[in-house]
Amino acid sequence: MKILCTSVDSLPVNLPPDEQAFSFFKPAGREGVGNIANKWKRLLKRKGFAPDASTWDFVQFCLAVCAADLACPRATSADGWTRVIELTVGLHEPMRWVGFEEHLAKMLKLLTGDYWTLHFVAGGEAPPAGTVTVVPHDCVCLLSGGLDSLVGGIDLVSQARRPVFVSQLAHDDSRRQVSYAARLGGANAHWQWSHGINFPGAREPSTRARSLAFYAFAVLAASRIAGDRVQVFVPENGFICINPPLVPGRVSSLSTKTTHPQFIAMMQELLDGLGVGVALELPYRFKTKGQMLQECRNQPLLEELASDTTSCGRFRTYNRTHCGRCVPCMIRKGAFYAWGPDRDRTNYVHDFLAEADKSSGPDDAMAAALAVLTVEERGLDRFLGATLGFAATDERSSYRRVLSDGLAEVEAVLRRDGVL
Image 1 (cartoon, rainbow, N blue to C red):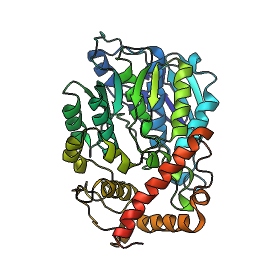
Image 2: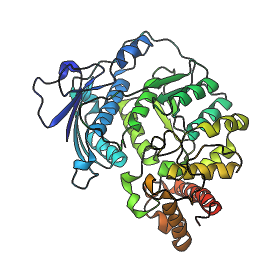
Image 3: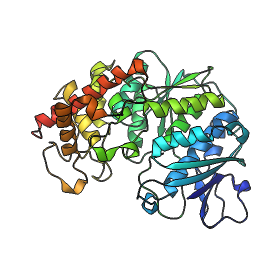
Image 4: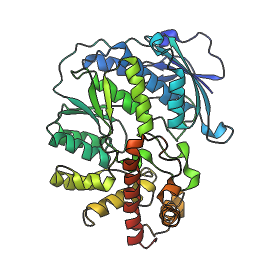
């Protein structure tokens, strides 16, 4: 599977029939050529963005990976999942990226489970040249509309930090993102963007690389903040960061690695190597979702907003309602139960995990129950296997503890609902 992402002016006259091409930031006006973030660069210029070439090329690279992820169907691969992707990206300063190809291939393999070959060539768009104005912020915080990002934003503001919130437009959560940012930082403390990837043909639905657009937006936002090393906060609980497979069949990229500490470390290494002054922070990597709720620094505000957040992995399937039985919903229920059984006012399709629902796909409640029973029978370390092989020696016990505590939160609602 071959993908080319570059500027309109750098597209070859004759494209190979086996290569899907994309143009950055404006349509190519050619049949079969896709488009990434149409008119976005023009908008950024009007908004006063003028990032350096390293930051801008990081944005172009991330968007190119997102486009490749969407355009390469897993169903046509040999095993129905693992793809072999050859991605050529036009960059403004491609020579700066020479030598990072192997590192990036490994980083993307961890994220998507695919085999990547990367080529960096001249032809990317130049950075927008807006008239820069000072923004009154001291850090960036990702804001998805989920429970963890809400807690992260509340905690930062409660510590007198001045975050700018960055969101990736999502039809289901856009209203929440705007509302939460306004409550926490004000009307001018939020940037909400979309990768806007369009192309002819079917789209791959697994979107394991979608988070790269989120990180690209955050790094771009950081370019507007004064300082040599701007903090970008990624508020995610440690259990989901590591996302241990509950059953043997959900190993590797079948469980998402969007905020996995190893992936974040590899991305930080890339940013440092490119000279991008950003520090990625995982402040809750040793906390469960329940502990995040219990320790949130503004309990009244959290209690007001928490039940409105989204967590469900099948939110669209159930017409923007939490299913109540997928893994994210179980972790959410376990967190609320640990925080206070009467505080969860979420509308669930299935209020109890014991309710049968064959239409929702895999029976995640049974998988979670089997994980709990496996830990009881064989011990946590046998259950985890090599899951913590990435962790430094001095951090392994902390990661082990958060996985144990996170599984205990899920176990509590499994027992409450009679699954165990």
